[in-house]
Length: 208
Image 1 (cartoon, rainbow, N blue to C red):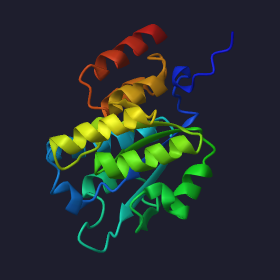
Image 2: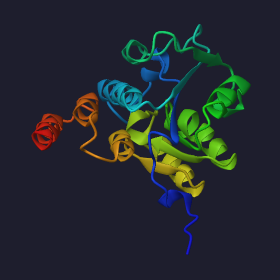
Image 3: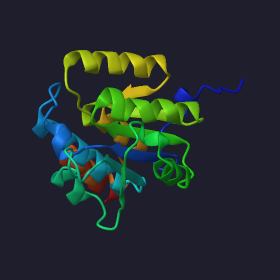
Image 4: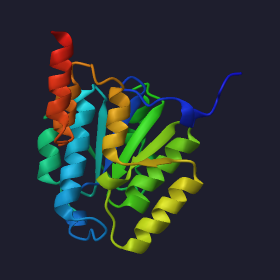
């Protein structure tokens, strides 16, 4: 019997893309559900790990020349220098033709989303992508928002819409799939997991 449930199909480096929405300096000043330093750490780790696995990244901001400002510098520093950060005016990033076209052009059917705020910048494009036929995931700890209530209602709405909620490291490790993969120790380093060195030692020992 064929299982057609998309949630039971593994997330891989070959079928996924990463969409980063509005991790901007001004928005970070209002984040209250997670420490700003932790949020910066998590989203930069997510971006590094995705690139380590060859997962393509699309990044977007809202009115970067206005009150919300550019991407936080920690994130901009780990993204490719030639990556265009798409600046838009739409509330829902999916409603901007450039963002949607950038995702669609990658030919991936799974989309990992992270954004600030969780309940708008991450949730709305994830829900729209789901409606468009993608299997969407939100890396919750690479998102931030402005109150506990916004976090709770955002998570509820995502689950009601059929979006997979997870933490960023679990999504990247699922894509890794095999700890014997040559990039494994580097990936765990990207994720800032202390036991990553043990994985590297294990892989090296197996190779001898």
